[in-house]
Length: 135
Image 1 (cartoon, rainbow, N blue to C red):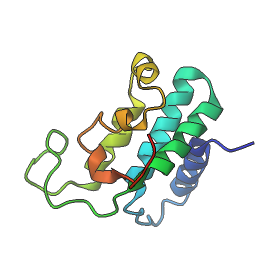
Image 2: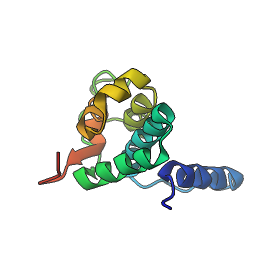
Image 3: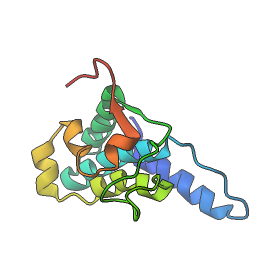
C-alpha cells in the first residue's frame, strides 16, 4: 500500500514544529513539492479516493520538474511589489491556490495536471513541464 504524500509532509511539518529552537532552511524546490502535495490533497479531499490522489501526485512528478531558482522578476498579482523578486511566501501561492479549489473545478480538471498548475501566477515559477512529460 502506498503512502499518501500529504501524510508524510504533515509528519515532517509536525516534527519541525516540535524542534522550533533552530529553524532549518527549506529546500528551494519545496514550493514545487508543495504544489504536487496540494494536487494529491485536493483530489483526495474532493473524491475520497486516496489512491487517485497518490496517482495524480505521481503524474505530477512524471510530467513536471521543479524550478529551484526563482526568477529575478516579480510575481504579478501575487507579491506585494510586482517589480520585486518574489519572496518564498509568494512562491507557495501555487500550492495554496490549488488546495483552495472548489471540488467542481477539481472534477472538471480531472487528471489534467497542467490545469492545476495554471490556477496561480506562482505555479510557472516553481514548476516546468518535463521534455516529453506526458499528457
